[in-house]
Image (cartoon, rainbow, N blue to C red; front, side):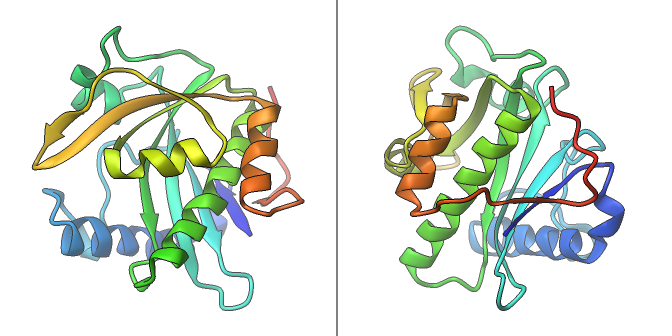
Length: 208
């Protein structure tokens, strides 16, 4: 199940959010050695705000976090606009119907590649469901080029916003995804999922 957590319901998810921030610290700082800070053992930055929406995939049997990410409105300062604008040849896409994906994080205990890929595929479905629920038209993100085949293979309608560049020794690139129902069906088929994955507590989502 994928939990959709916004400022409206995050008071119901204090423990789960704390674990997500701890996982981010374990993956991004301890394992990947990114130049980030983690007060109290939790990785947060300026783009974890009251406007942020988090998606967290939780194992229905064990209760463990399988993967997580955050979504931010591009009308506000966000990761791409503030740190990676040079990756966008025609400028950073912005607008009320354009949201940015960032801080995708898998369970740091996953040692098998298959487990990581499965967690990524599941959350891709959740992202498309969330975008359609809110009426978004596009999603943007910056990723390492090693993940490009997975983004293409999942069924997303994806296009690069510029050429790859080096960042701390890693090749990264900015992308844009068109939000469509066909895209949702494609990612569900590739993930072998038949039903919606999002869980929203309480039921107060405003659909555009």
